[in-house]
Length: 553
Image 1 (tube, rainbow, N blue to C red):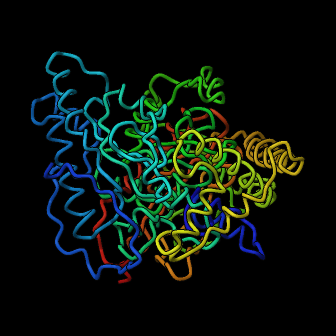
Image 2 (image 1 turned 180 degrees about the vertical axis):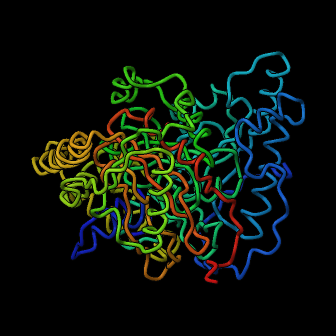
């Protein structure tokens, strides 16, 4: 899901709060330690981060790290160790970001083997020896857990690698650890606080420690922003990649549904779920997506990607890519919710013009306010069906949604200290996917989000992309009242299953705000070209300062 109580960012008001939920909580040796945490019921925010020691790998890209290894100035082992030391210093201690649930006890061994391959003249590709963090809803074989942040799966048998985890290993990446997240991908409570899980406690934003990282890929967002690994992988149902990327000054890519396999990923809803890159640069995101994408027999929806996937997404990166591009500005529901985000948006539009883009303003998405309730209905049905299938495969104590609800109730002191499980209970009451109410809701979503929505506006104006602020700046962490949100761009492309890339666009009182590039199905090449050109023209990414709070001066 996503962040705050905007979870899947439905743009309309909702008298019972479901819409707010969708729109705020988007919808994982010395340094080689297993940092497996249990929930903390004492969530005291630090007064300040204190002095953060300089970090030799700060803001380094995949290419920078490869250059070091190729020149013999560093090894995969040394790089992995440096990141592990960084995690120990500022994630467990110092500012205590609580972004990494556990590190991989096998990481240094894996890195050593990859160094040996390099010495023997074998380099698998650009990810050879590069450390990556995975959200803790992505299955990993070996000695790490996969729990969706829940204590209910803390002792469950370790599953085989997810398809994308295996792809990363094959590409030579070093899986460094698993990141914290909004528990159950923020599909648990209508009053949740994004970034909190029973297993990991409350994740903090490295730009201002009292601010929300958003969700549900909260830990991946905070960790990659804070340079705890080179790159990270999150998952999204509605906003959970792009929203924490917005809040944490990252590039986030929510791919077309079916470009990346979901096999071995703890689900929310098969009609919208996908994994995606979370990185500090567009180029790194393109490299990571190249490794993640692929047809998987265990996920039938990926079959179509054989016609559309590309062997190397970096081939589309063009610093002049905005020249002549037709960019639509969707004002309705995408602007006006945040003065700061609007200001960042205005500056970005000016930068797009300066880079040679043709701006069509407004280019509103028709019916953008017509599928919030149907989306939530679809997610409730699919969550019950998909989670029951996944849990039964884990063969643990908790083997169904019914078991999960009972577990949380039995362990409410640790699992329900701040908010409940209303959404789990709502999903449990739904019938099978053959229910006419489900089918009608899904048909409504597809019709309004795709055919009459994004497709219609892009056809009418002959657009290459829609561009708008991704969301507002990060709100305060509030474990008493839960999330509150200020708007988002994620729901249209999430419901449609269309690609969405966010790039750092500017800052509001030191808090990042991203700019979103949204397109039709399988338009990743175009979006990468445009997003890269925007990134190179504006260069807005700044490393976090670990401030205690936002700079209001």
